[in-house]
Image (cartoon, rainbow, N blue to C red):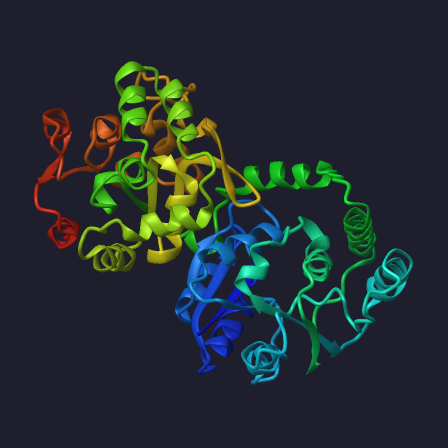
Amino acid sequence: MITVIIPALNEESTVGFVVKLAKNSPLVTEVIMVDDKSMDNTVKEARKEGATVITSTKLGKGASMKDGTLVAKNELIVFLDADIVTYPTNIIELLTTPLLSGDADFVKSYFSRQAGRVTELVAKPLLSILYPSFPNFKQPLSGMIAGRKNFFAKCEFEEGYGVDIGILLDMYHLAANIQEVCIGNIENRMQPLEQLGKMSREVARTIMKKAKGIEQHNLETFENIQVIREQMDFAIRESLMTLKKIAVFDMDNTILRTSFINAAADRFGFRKELVDIVTNNNNPFVRTKLIARLLKGRNIGDILSLTDDIGVTPNLSELLGSLKEQGYITGIISDSYDCITNHLKNKYGFDFTMSNELEFSKSIATGEVKIPSFYLQDNESQCKHEYCKLNALINVCNRYKVDLKNTLVIGDGENDICIIRKAGIGVSFCSTNIYVDAVADYVVKAPDFSLLVPLLD
């Protein structure tokens, strides 16, 4: 009946509590934690409590909220912050009762707390000047909200601290029936002064932008953060430092029983265009760029829904459990897209993924793709290919301080030949390529991961 969406970034100590609280409500049939590429155990803790986990297409709470609404299966949606453990036990009922009774289309919470300096000094004065008839909400910046999916679909989810006030203003412009409800006393982290300055600027910019109807984008701060985050993507977690073995899976025709792009061609109707690209372009860079354009205009919900509809090789979870018991770091190296491999990572508990980065804007694929540098030839490369999965494996081995001989690689295609040949144990899995079989240490022809468990002994 109700979907609860929890955007989260590095909230391993609290996210499990929030997920459990949401699932305890009899009204809730779906809990989605949208991970903003956390560097701690946030995903693990959310999955442990039974949440569905997806990875945000772009850094920032706004993108995470938008992605969550596109994936949500229910019409009524609740958003909760992941860093709060003082919610009342009936928080879901408090936020959704006006929706269920038909008295509201959008519900905004208010609560008692330590302080609200940006609200009192920035948001309320600006609203009173630019929107003289705007309702006098007690806490217009509150992030604990609920509403109808068809209204959220018409909202623009701003980046940064402007997202919550932006949704409220959009609901106001949509003539939604808005109610504000009290959810008691909430204790959340106090923002340092430098963050309050940034928060103030972003809230003010959003209010003025909505008032004038003028697009104003200043992404300098966001872009700087994104660069830093890309450099940190493969930082070694402390919990993995003692592990000395890596198991790598290909995705298409290995984890998934068909290739994602072939399934997409059938569902989205670009089979002819895909065949033309594949048969007329030998250069892997050109081919990758052209294929990505076929996904232009598809939203993250469509893409993840298709991924979930593709069959997964039986006994994947059992194999992953066996690998982890024996101390393996597990990951996916694929020439598909990060939004898909991250989805599988979240769903099944892989430790890392390496893949091409499909670009999104407002949760819609732009048709552009970034080929990460870890695929490219450098002075540590062990083959002559300009673009190769082996380069990615060497990269991840260096980062986790694991010898290449202590790797297990499972794949099926021509682009897996180098990585299977150089791995400590290379497995040709359901391959139709005679050269993959020839370089592999083991050949498995039946699509069942339980057949690999004896290899671990």
